[in-house]
Image (cartoon, rainbow, N blue to C red):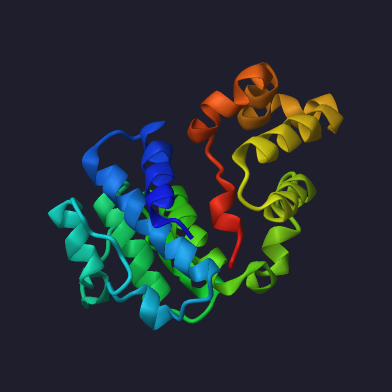
Length: 212
């Protein structure tokens, strides 16, 4: 679909918490990988740079795009964005299942929750929900809510306003304890009249949920 829109929303999503150019550029690159995975690209194509828009991207991220994650070296996912991105891609390239790659990056230590989440975004998009071990998904807190939201967003396709209107209604239908812990749902409820205006700042965009 529209790569410019994807890049714009990836940049804005990064800036809600991380405004450095390296973080923004990493999100722009990674969002293109995730979109490619959802569209069914092979791993070989994803990890080449043939479809990546690299205009204005930092040299540190360009180095990763060019394959630094394939090098035989010690990887340390310290939490620094370049270390995290490189480690996640190393595991995605090296291992042939969601489970093997995730176990590997977490076992490296350091900032395990961050590198696990970064790896899981791309690996989940590539391998699909059915290839994530059931022993993990079944114990996930609020699994049914997360699954249902994702499924409905997929059905809604590309309309951010429609998606956020639905999320608002969905949050109203949930038992209060299910909403109170979730900052996204609380934010939607508190800002219903401004959803169209602020939709670009919300951390979910339906662009990434359609494979066509």
